[in-house]
Length: 229
Image 1 (cartoon, rainbow, N blue to C red):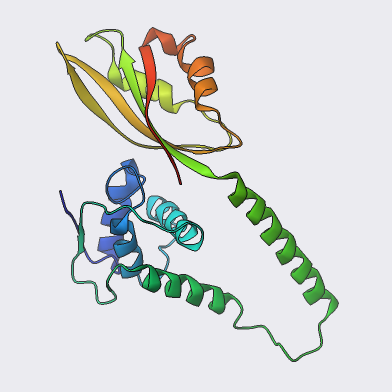
Image 2 (image 1 turned 135 degrees about the vertical axis):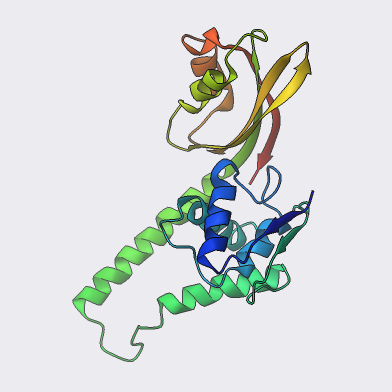
């Protein structure tokens, strides 16, 4: 189903986008797609930090566009009355990211004598870029889990709270939904993004979902999809 969003360059539109992304990692589906590119390019600038969900999504999509890009087709998205909306092409997204980088360097005097402060700042930037490169090399993955309860009397809200209570470096929980499996029983499908070098999905399931108190609600947990980002 195609997604319809209000003008994302207004306060009302940004608020709606922020609310929409509260339970979602992407505009549609479980992977970054051309729908995300369309909304990203429709925004005239980065959302205010007060829009936590929109800011998280905007930074994530920007990082993907600067590294591996976005290839998934998506389900289709329409951004209403957005004067800055343009076709969602990689070239447009790349130009937007490049323009942001150029703005960061616009106040640098290329012909002035480099001061000690400028040398120190340059060294810090170089170290930051090096650290960022190492993080990119580690890679990330998008994982979809099936979490099944013991029976139809299991409190699914408590089950999901138990799943999301697991916190660790490199683990980010995303959208979720309940799916009927018959006889009044529903399973939880939940999305997560992991940093490959920091999180082992098998260990996560074994160490956190097969022991108390999680196993009071969780009968089993299976990996449905595992995709590199």
